[in-house]
Image 1 (cartoon, chains in turn red, orange):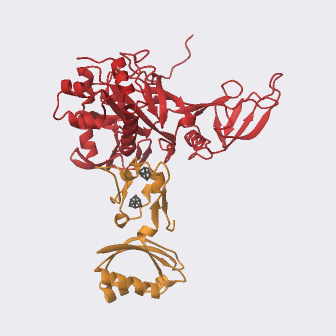
Image 2 (cartoon, chains in turn purple, orange; image 1 turned 30 degrees about the vertical axis):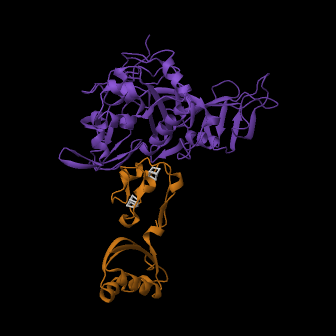
Image 3 (tube, chains in turn orange, purple; image 1 turned 180 degrees about the horizontal axis):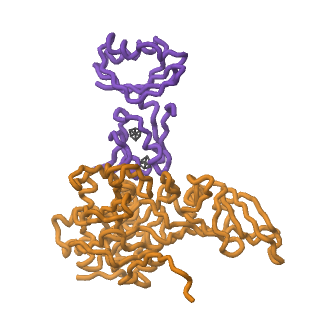
Length: 383
Length: 136
Ligand code: SF4
Ligand code: SF4
């Protein structure tokens, strides 16, 4: 048996679609075969809520009178891009003023979503068509033209677990790593995570409608560093940092319940982003894929004290138990992404689909295959 | 039972043999978790008192009438629960198990009685939600 997107959407419109979260379906799979799951279930909702540095927002401020070609721009004292036409900018989540490193682009984005008023200051050289050289004013989501969240790399398919074998505490984007491997931090939502439930991106591509920070958003491209070459485990799951998604959505509809500005000690600003992706069960293969359980998802242990050496392998059931045994040591494990929030997102998306408020989209273009990553080499200019 | 308290000395009251009195008069096992007392004999002590509840109550009354301020530790350390996203970053750094996260609900759990006032959570929380009212 197979189902089409249209058949599933027809059921959604009639309020008859059967929707489960990825955790619920993994539980079901303990007693049911993929064929029976395909029979019973139409859509599986997946989700994650974690720190995703490669995020940001396009803003258009509108023109002042007299107009200015904004070439250098600051919002609440944080320098943001002045390289986008006269009154557009891109606020990168990790943008910050080095004088005040704990506040940055991600906080600006969150405050805008919360309806706050922020200070915009901009400078231009003055041109015949844009004579003004300086402006300082207040902006909010109400006063500006567009505010579009655009995240080039979100929802990593899997991610290495971080430990630290050195004698000193390391402050990283994987949190505080205590010396001599006293703790291990992991960041994937495991069996609930979007790209672990459709590991080859059969249903996730350009144009896939998703949950993004409280509203409906879209997958707009393969995420940057999209990597199809990571080794697979026995269950066909890539180990380590593999595929990613580029996502976009309307900021005015978002809620800071699912988007937060954050600061990792001695590392910098980043943004917590909440993402939910629906996976249609089109055939038995997908029913099998969404049945994946934490015990079947492996990832590598990476030593952040030794230039990122991969020193072991562990699965998410072990990580979730709060303690792993590794190299004769008991290591305390803790998450960095919120399973509590991810579950909320998966439940909201399920509710939207059950109520007929959210239909599924077939990819306009599939994700690339066979990609791998290049490192950055230091070379002389070629003649 | 055990109870953690923060003792604040001022006016040089740290010169009193307070701990001796606690042990001797009230039969309390006292562990010093943190001590921060300046040359002028002012400062703070974090103590763990171990005895039955009646003795602990009497000991706290005694200290209060002797001119030192006694506050339960949980009143001195707090985090903004309404803003917490239950990411777990603070539990990774917390050495005492006072902060924990896990099945079934994966919501942050804070047990102040286990806290050893190391302050690692203050820097570990990416949303900066912890507040510890204690001399630096
Ligand atoms: S001060 Fe230290 S022991 Fe207390 S809650 Fe924070 S991290 Fe845990
Ligand atoms: S680190 Fe902060 S936001 Fe995360 S669980 Fe702890 S208190 Fe909550």
